Length: 275
Image (cartoon, rainbow, N blue to C red; front, side, top):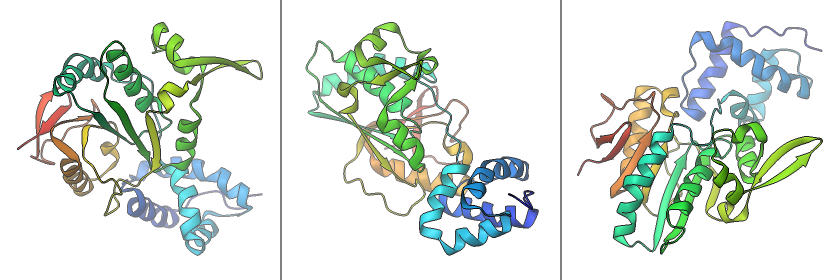
């Protein structure tokens, strides 16, 4: 169907300008092949025969098509208990601190939550910690720019192999086993789902809809896709949305040196507000 399935430099430049505008992601030249491969399926769905025509279609139907476009371009790599030492720190340091404060509610933001493994892991760790204790109300906001992965997260259904990092005790307590078309899946149970609220959010938009601050913000393996100016603006927002005694956790491959001085290192890629 496609007469011209090669993405020209000119069309790539126009498309990556939109990616930067809408998602804050700067695509290098080496990403042209990735963009081409990810967009091919969409071109076939629309019966569009060139990337130039797709760009025209995107501009003509911008408010609706930009969501499909960004969904295709963004990378969504995540796992249960990814960078496990963060969850050990949460269990050993953060949650005992929360317990001492005797909070009525514990507010956490998983920014860039992808298909839900991170916020569900957070919920499991907190549930286990407070299992035989007085527990605050657990409120986990999970946001992502990609509507397709958010729907997967809301469904909470994962292939058996995705649960490889999850301890058996967690699986028995927080998942139910299902067989679908001969394949084994595990579905997150309601006790976890009721703690997590999934919402679409572009981290680079000017205003966020949240009204209250958070005790913990997870934003891991997200800022590596942003340029320095976008990172600085994002950390300014995180500073405002984090309680004075709150924690910010970023990915192990990320670094805020020379980006912001508003946070103090408190562990491996774990920060607290500089007051």
